[in-house]
Length: 253
Length: 94
Image (cartoon, rainbow over all chains, first blue to last red; front, side, top):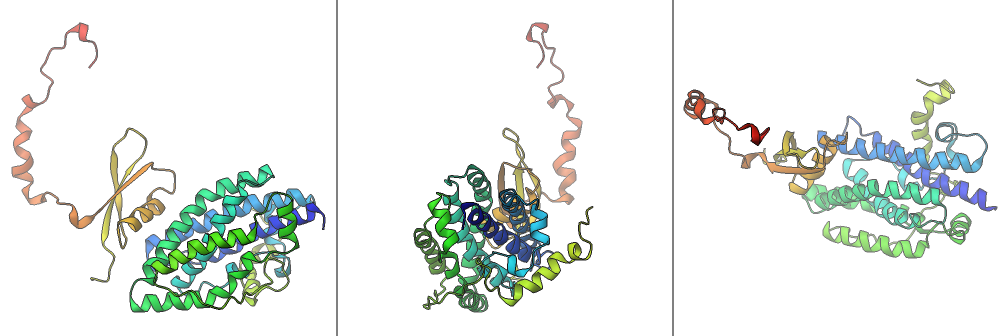
């Protein structure tokens, strides 16, 4: 694998994470339990889509095959996506959405913090801009997880169920492969073991305050960021997200 | 109703040096979330640099039915406005 190929793959991972999660969160628009949460979720979704434009825009430049961020977002099929399995999981109830968000945000904050020191200035600049938004995302999602976990019997039960359901998707974030190794060697990607330790410190503190029990199993699903095997949910999501560009290729307004 | 989140009044300062202004209200479980909700609901278009929230129940408001005794007496007291002083030219614009 050449460095350029690895860099393209790595940028797709960054951009596909924010694209898929951004679309998932946008599915709440008009459906959230209260107006304030509805707007907050829409803001988060828009932040993530904005970050997608930067990551996939840079991916297109690096690939140098004339594909724009829009092309990459709307004209690839499931097997070309490089997002984590966690972010493509369905929204479920509000608690499940916020648990997914919190787990991703805790990882995202640490990852972007490291990427601000990347040897590639373009990556460092995007990470610095995104980090400000994502710091707020984590503030908000962690506080909601704590509030609902340490809330009523019903909200506690739902948050524990969400954590049990989503925990097997956490390990993939920290399982390095050839792309991660190449990017680390190039002074771009961080050491994932070190990232995991910082993630665990954050998440343990949040879960303790939320009175939630971290699942003991370390079993980790995989296949998202490599594109080897996405869950069935991503394809269904893409049919919604991409249908207009699929039906009317190149349509603009 | 005890299950409902309380109502909060939101005050935003638009720029450094200006006062906080009341911009609206929202629901939130506690003060910290009220600040966050205010950030998301009322500062999306770069409206503010500072947010105050106060639970609506802690605001004591004057009663509209007291309008007469409260405000009418000052209507006839024009001498309370500092408009009757001659300002010396040397003082310039004040």
